[in-house]
Length: 328
Image (cartoon, rainbow, N blue to C red; front, side):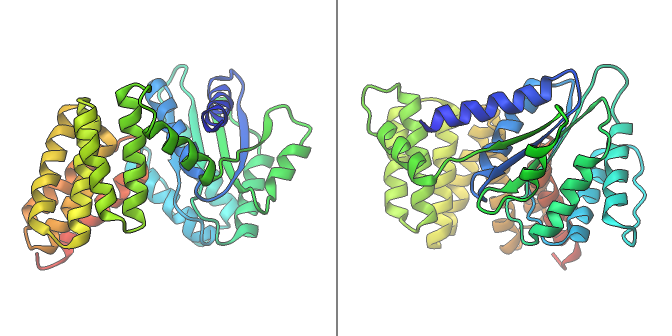
């Protein structure tokens, strides 16, 4: 059941991205369900090298602060200078933001996919105003929009659903965590399942265990993965979780040693998400230990490993700047 819902969402996103005409999609979901949208768009990004994806999952606090974030990401990602006018109305700023991203596209058959999928929406009326402004504006032929709404209190989803335009689509995505947990738990204990599938399920449960402070359970699942699967990317993730556990319980030496082993394996296996996570975690840890050149190199690595993840890239750059601003 969960996989069916994820595949259905994937088909909708893929249709929007690959459609020859510009489209806007409003997806209603809960905060934790934004993960699936971001993950699927990341996969589409990797499968569509000729298109440019701008996926923003930062929380929406106020329209002004949110657009500040968009402009910062755009400045770091494109060559076309972006005029910054924080005193201008949000509608004009978002129009300028989109226009400059489009202007930076190379000539030829290239599309720009802009997904504003905040992980939290603190000012629902403010985000709806921004979303409806974007929905009301004529869409450039090269533009595809994906906008999140709150499934528990939808606003601009209704606007999209009631639109007479065939290029504006409303979609509701629902995947309650208890449904996911039941399927993952069943997969982890299904001895008939392929080893790598079981290993992935065990690592998902290990992450949940760690999030709830069940460190020994997390370690036990990672140990099971080391015996179950030889896939380098899965082994790297298991080591990364073990490093996180060591850091959580205060065993700094183990956190560094295991974390570096995870990082080497992740780089060798081209497991970019693991590289990003471990490089950031070890960068913060070595920075606190006063090992500044090492921390700076780790933040740089996280930034280089995240060309398709503006949130991680921006965080790595911000941590690098903070490091330079200290006496370290």
